[in-house]
Image (cartoon, rainbow, N blue to C red):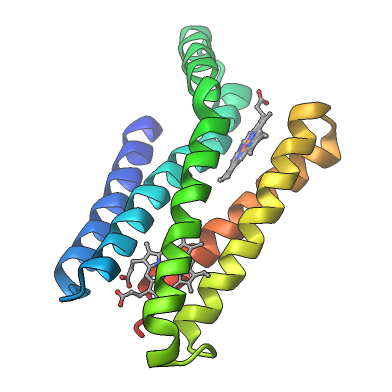
Length: 166
Ligand code: HEM
Ligand code: HEM
């Protein structure tokens, strides 16, 4: 049951970003549109990564042995691409930020909430990557908490950034 809710929340999240970006925020400029394409792909990759928290949570909580095994296998598969997704997403977002800064920064001002929240989101992404790296090297209670807390803060911030008007 909770499994369906989880799938539906993810689908709604992705669909709402697609509707918002590609219906309400269209631009004539091809380069700005490309910047939006980069961001759209990147946030889907980040959402996949953040889902790891819920998979590990359910693995720890569930009493249904079969379900636990299925999820453990799934998490192992997903963790194989976790770091790759993070790196690809980061590269795409750096291009996104660069394009927006150069093409819109001067026009809307660098202290615009959209620009400021984007830069803050990149800072949190850097912290999340660093925390992920620490966790990858050697896991501990603190490192685990550091990585998922920064990942959550980053997710909240990029969601705010995404839905802010310019
Ligand atoms: C230097 C950092 C950043 C800057 C300057 C920046 C700037 C912008 C600007 C100006 C827009 C509006 C484009 C439009 O008119 O539609 C935008 C849209 C968007 N940004 Fe960023 N951004 C940055 C970082 C990020 C990060 C870190 C993420 C996500 C992880 C992100 C995700 C998005 C998404 C999904 C959109 C599409 C929504 C929309 O078009 O309004 N951005 N960004
Ligand atoms: C976009 C960036 C990233 C996001 C949003 C993200 C998010 C997450 C989340 C939510 C978890 C589950 C935490 C838990 O329940 O303990 C996790 C686990 C993990 N992440 Fe990341 N992560 C990112 C990047 C990275 C990077 C760059 C690395 C390594 C270089 C990394 C390494 C790990 C490791 C080792 C685990 C633990 C897997 C396990 O326990 O088997 N992550 N990540």
